[in-house]
Length: 258
Image (cartoon, rainbow, N blue to C red):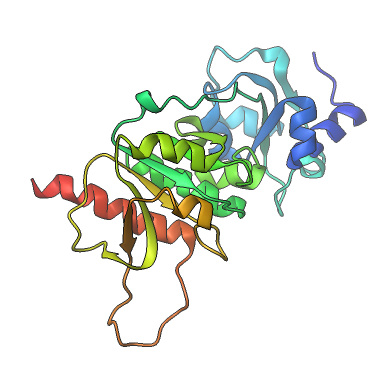
């Protein structure tokens, strides 16, 4: 039986920080939905939960009972990154980093250039999952997909959508020879009227500065999400997660018109 020592509580709390995740080679999922959606998808180290939570939820028989730790919400709250203490936290081994293999990419792929907000990344992963996309390419300076706030925002999509980090311009250059690399820019084609392919990479940029010059040089098709009506004063820009959802929905809508 694992004891929830002060040292272990500190180690779990440190998973909210990149250094803690790297040191422990682990990440955490917090809250009932997030825990239940990820059970079985990753190698579990610990499940810390209140006695009431454990009594209310039937866990898979494959979970080792020795890895289950009962604790009160106050103790769980000390380890959690959430503003309100959850009833359960699962700690998982970090999976092996997925490798970039361009020949394996088909259909739609999302590419993220320096996206910084963990909630935005989690929402984009959730949207990709809904749209049937299981791979996201990301620049090395994009936020960590195993940040607890990202994991929470994915609403379980972390179990099905992998994020491949690396030299994004180099990855896109290799893909540009095989498929359109699309990005959103002022002056691009209207995404609502453009003839969009089934197979493409959709590049989305940083929340404040958009797609970088280095990445934009790999984009061979520029798209625009126009505001409506065109002459009406409006917000300066769209949230990157919202913009991603709009663009992906336009790509997918073509499949329903055949």
